[in-house]
Image (cartoon, rainbow, N blue to C red; front, top):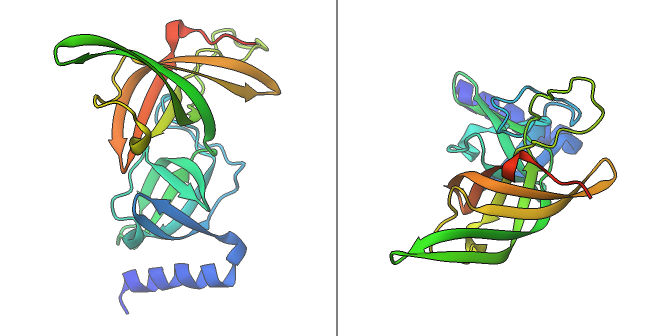
Length: 215
């Protein structure tokens, strides 16, 4: 057996020996068994403050996920996460994947103005999304107890649920409610980037006007 096959066999052997550490990961049409290699309590440094914080890592066979990339939506045992980092070993046998905390199901309202056949058309419709806060921006108040309200988010929309012929666009707006620290608050965001990835629209969104209003 070659080195690649040895590493792949080792991953499979560990999954058999430690079933509690083994999980099914799905990405697009790909799936495979991965192993937890860190605690969910870890807190890695994000690449930018417009990416979610890394909360755990898993390792699997690179051949199971040949085109997985940072910022992709995956399911781990059926629970959605975003990938925060992708690291492949020198012989491309294994891939280590950094994962965000689980995404939250949100019922959002989506608004925007798109040009359709040369005319400006106002859009407003309900939209089911999966959302997660990105890495915290610096707090200019230092020791202030109030949470940072200028928080960016990543919001994922299943392409099959997108109701319009025109794609999501920069400047469109999302609003929904979320809970944090036992409080429920309103989120109002403006889309700054929209990327389609394996059946999902991955939207990076910033607070509209820089403010999130607490209830």
